[in-house]
Image (cartoon, rainbow, N blue to C red):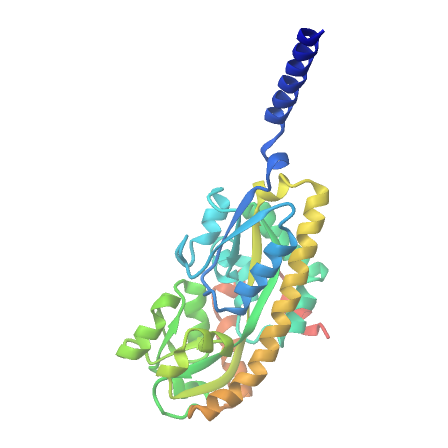
Length: 329
């Protein structure tokens, strides 16, 4: 009897072990999704991703690689496309290199504020642009990650009121022609430089200034090497939270819905925090001794829009989309 029981027990144990071995990896433990971004761990968006990671931890382990520690700035999109990365914070300027129509979304003075940006991405127009990326680049866009409005910060003390006042000013811009176009559109002499090198560039005089939202200026301590901030408001700054298409399609419908919901929640929180921080920082920088003022915005807008409409980039913009975006209330 004992021998029979032992035999049955051994067979049952063996079957259980075999069944466990046959389970797919996702059923055994949450898969790891690596996330890469240029921003630092002190950025609001780093907290956004920590919140997101907590909300999806039952299904996925999100591993954060910030400050370009996994992929250098501008290469994250290609890493997603080559299945070398699962998630990334992607600049629309990098998308525009491969999908020229997206250069419209990188043009100066297009979106009025974060609400206008979000309204666009939630609309049929936004869906059209996201589908271009899915079809052509095989990357899923979860949503826009607003991180403030870009302004010009200068080491020099020369007062700036109109675009002509920026003539000859070496303004650091991220690498890439789309970014250089943005710098030229506001009258500056754009100088490509990596984000992580900008502080030293200002310190040594390799550049005269940089353009970033105020929270970024604080995070990277650019205010320590600037004398003034010109509130040009030339670009409502955003990246997109993106997922490798292979990863997205492998989730299944239920996990996709919960993943998207967690992203929507985190993105909304981050946008609200950036808006709150922007309102506080202008006064904070003034108290630190920086000149912070508003130039002739109408002159900057007119100059920038003329520059874009005369450029080759505008030839690739979807017909009528600029007017439709402007008409959104």
